[in-house]
Amino acid sequence: MAGAKILKQLLVERNMNVNELAERLGIKPQSMSNKLYRNNFSFDEMRNICDILNADLKAVTRDSQKEFYETMELKHNE
Image (cartoon, rainbow, N blue to C red; front, top):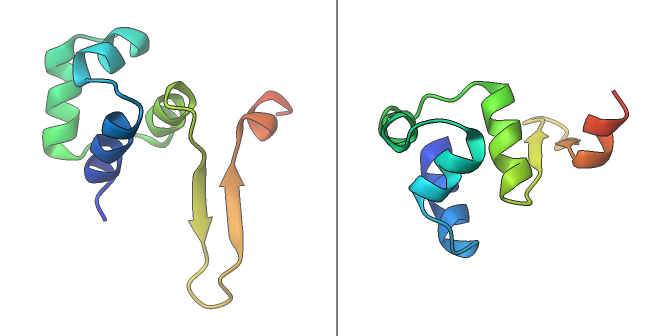
């Protein structure tokens, strides 16, 4: 599933719209809309967005199914 689709689902779940998210990120709403349309986010942007939406990033290896999380606890202990 594309990152933009996941973000849109998270926005719905959190009762937040693109303009509110853009404001919390300190960017213009049009810039946020463009990022969603192009599905173009850096890892740091995704981490910041997940932080705002109270979500964690997770990577799962395909072979062993081992899970790696980017959580707030890890972020603060870097």
